[in-house]
Length: 74
View 1 (tube, one colour):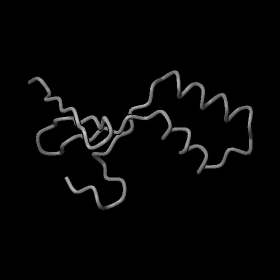
View 2: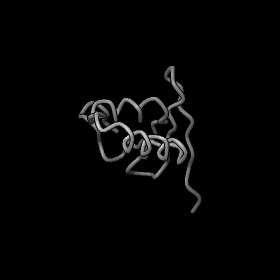
View 3: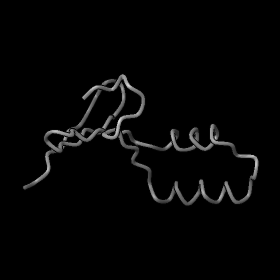
View 4: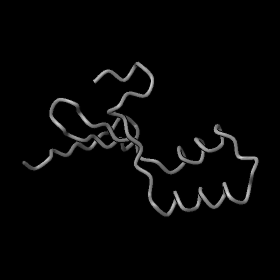
């Protein structure tokens, strides 16, 4: 996986549903939230996940260079 080319299709953001609801409510209340602030709100709560396009493993980024990998059951 090459991570140096922007946001590839295999890079995912895992966001809790509760946080999505809260961000949606902020958008309804504050009409001045621009795209930069929207992405800041997402980045504050997301877990970055990488899905290997070859084998289907998912790698959860736990921070500080630590990843937890899961293999799909077949």
